[in-house]
Image 1 (tube, rainbow, N blue to C red):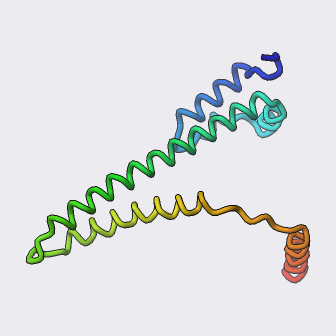
Image 2 (cartoon, rainbow, N blue to C red; image 1 turned 180 degrees about the vertical axis):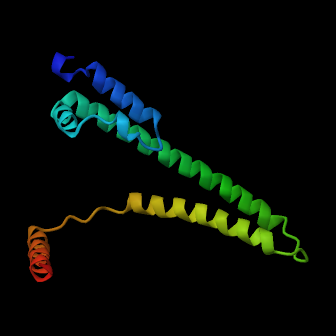
Image 3 (cartoon, rainbow, N blue to C red; image 1 turned 45 degrees about the vertical axis):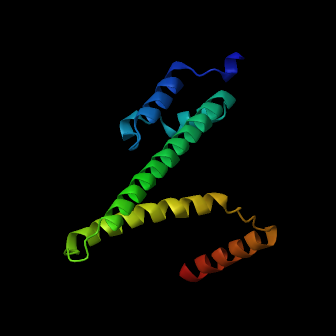
Length: 139
């Protein structure tokens, strides 16, 4: 590996803190913006950041799939063991939350399968023109 592709200590520590803070990195651990821009010019840092991003997306997808699986199992148990004479006030709330979890997973899978639409240059020009007109009217 070439020396310019390796991470230096501060980059490595930043990426490790980013990995260990799934809720988000506290402000005091972020490097200055100029430092981050400089780091992003190096292919080794960009590759490490991309790898971390891919890992975190995989973890998110895995956890969502596991949650949806558990919710579907609980949903099956609730529906198969439901006593029609029983009051449904509390089970209705639980049922709604389980259905929401399963539905969120289905929507995420559907979005992942859908190909992204590429905008034409003409569409981008028209959007830029409309933005310009909106700014002129507002200002």
